[in-house]
Length: 314
Image (cartoon, rainbow, N blue to C red; front, side):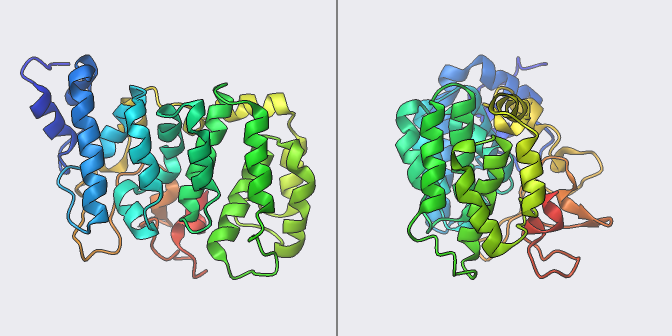
């Protein structure tokens, strides 16, 4: 790749250009000059967060900064990432978009250490936060376990606390955000074969019936019983979204905004927008019966749910 005419300023401009083609050369240049680039990438990340928090337009988009700082294992990014998870749902969606559910757990874990576990736990168990932000924190904990950074017992204790929080009122079926998080947590318990919390799980199915992410209890149990702790960990770690961030290009080059047939810009945002279109990996999440759909749009099946919580989940 030809990077001879680049410098840090031009490379960063390419990374934050909303309407440009995929910035292969800029990423390659940043990788070759990461010591010089890291302070600038951190500044982009922090500035974008401050601007969203203050309800002003983002000057430089943070998407590639998120991935590159994770790829470089920059620990100074961790507090900024944690603050991003504490944003209200609408602002979280502006800052992270589908990165939240696709790769943010890996981004957070890549910038974390074992000493950061209590802070990640606080976000995962904070019922005032957006359920998908909490799930990303839980995913980061899973990855830290899978990467051998924390002991299994530390992860298990967090799941136990999540499933036994005093404010988990099993008679309150109206707390959608909390139940969504519980649903996702139980799904992860099955995926990682967390047998230590097995007895805590069936009462949730007895109360709620089939769940959005877990399905019926029988299906969840069948998946759970098909694995051992060892095989579950191996299977979990084999999935790209359940690992550290190692290759920014591989994870971002297929975002739909970079495909030749797409003519839309990378994002569209004004302060009046309640929803911002964000870059997304190639997936069926954006199409339903040939119709292009935003992840927060109503599902066209007529369920009344957001697309991301209905046919966009698969």
